[in-house]
Image (cartoon, rainbow, N blue to C red; front, side, top):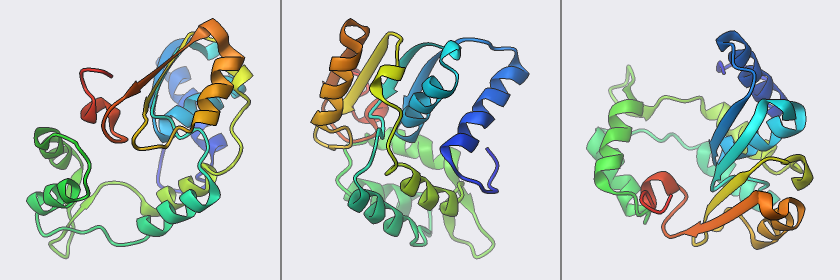
Length: 195
C-alpha cells in the first residue's frame, strides 16, 4: 500500500486483492503477523474463496481501546537514532527477547538515513497511528474463518487474549490449532524454532 490515506482495513484488503489479481493468484495460503493477521481475518470476510488456509502469528485480532490509544501515542514520537547500533541497543533495552543478529538484519533492511543525519525506520508513522485505531474496531466474527488455521501466540506478550482464543476454538473446532510460544510479539524471531 502507498503512504496516502485512507488507512483502513477495507483499503488494505482491496490493495491485497488487487495485487493478487495482478499476479494471477486466485486462491492462496496466508501467513499474517500482528496487523497482517487481522488483515487475513478481514480478507476471509471480504473474499473467503481466496483463502485456502491461514497461519496467524500473534495476530492483532482486536485491541482494547486503551491499548490502541497507548500504542498510537507511543508511535507519535520521533523514533530517530544516531546509528543502526543505537536502534539495536534501544530494542534490546526494551526487554524484547529478539536475538541480536535478527535485529542487525532488520536495521540493514529497514533503517534509512534522513537529511538531518538521523536514522529512522522506513514506514509512514501516520498510517501506523491510524492502524492502531482500526485495530480497536470489532473484527469479523470467528465463524468467517472457515479454513484450516494455525494461530501462534506469544502468551507473555498478551496481544491475543484468552477470550479470543476460546471464541476461535469454539467457532472453528477441528479447523484450528492454537500454539502458545515463549518470547515477545515478534514470534518469528523471538520463538523462531517453535514458530
